[in-house]
Image 1 (cartoon, rainbow, N blue to C red):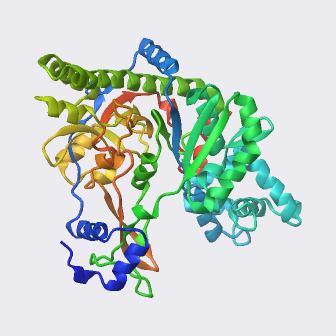
Image 2 (spheres, one colour; image 1 turned 30 degrees about the vertical axis):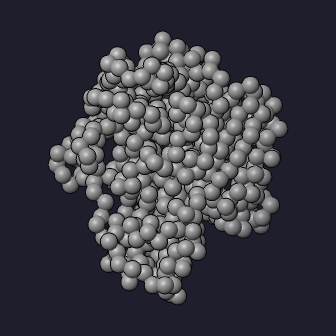
Length: 510
């Protein structure tokens, strides 16, 4: 273990002031020194081998089962991401291009950037086009006298710069994504409309957004501005709540010698622990079913019927499996354990939970069945980056279904690389979760995290190299010991916006 001498009295005081446990920080330092072992892939999960495929009849059946339920529902949306990454290529454009130096057409030929080519060819189709043009009219003198290249430059500058619309510093959730008749909708608004379709009961919908403290007021202002219109259009009233990633989930950073990274004043640097830290926020939510979806994965409202149908079907299948689990555990409490219960438990594990083990006694049954449950939508692999569904062997020899990110795989190993290449599906972060046990008590979700499934990444700070530790991802290691069901869903349910030109894809346009 790390010796006490590695942390000074001042370090210990800083750690405690930050709200962290000294022992936790010591373990993090040890993790940097030891490294994080790569995941051991057994095989890719495919249809019929870890991934279910619903028939149309099952989609209807499970959807009705969900609709008939009287469960408490909430939609959980990680929304702390900034829009700056969306506009990375445009930032570089502003830094590299000057209209007075060369024609824009020559610059684009030299850059060989498909993204910039696409942006300037179709920039009038963005939902934010009218807003940018209105701002230009208000702030850019003699705009009409500018050359076409100067107008293009002014458009990007007005879009991103602080003295313009300052989109670069907006949260991604508040960037206009979709254009409708008379107004535009942000991703934030689209999540409200979606929730009205599949995550509402008795004309009420509850949503929880994880945001940064700096962006909280912007989200509140946006909700206040659109609430009346959206509630009238959907016939649903919305309860919106927010939370921040907790400082107690921050992790210590180190230099490339695995010593604590320090600023010019000798203070330790702590960094946010990544989206895996949100397991703490999720743990604070008490509901029967929790829908989870990323902030940028939304679609034009004309396609919502398909999205809604499959979301309901996922929830209905989760309820179906949960009822079977609860029945087994309640029977044990009422009648005691017997061979018939054991047979039912093993059958359920094999048929629905894809657990490759055989239960032998009551302790096994209670241990494996009495856990949080997640059902995860999987789409056919279209080449987009994202975690994939795999059969994975843990350090104790158990094999289970997990969502694995590329950074967790040992792709230098030929056998592991081949398994990774055989993946037919990937995870679009389309989850429905159950976090209460058969007695109605909420699980402590932090007890089902595999702490050895984090990430070590390389960053820079103050112009120096730094190594950062990300906690096990929210739908990866943070849910490693949940009961897991994978189901194929249509590709149309996955519409992420990683760069600005993704908004030109057909599912984001009319």
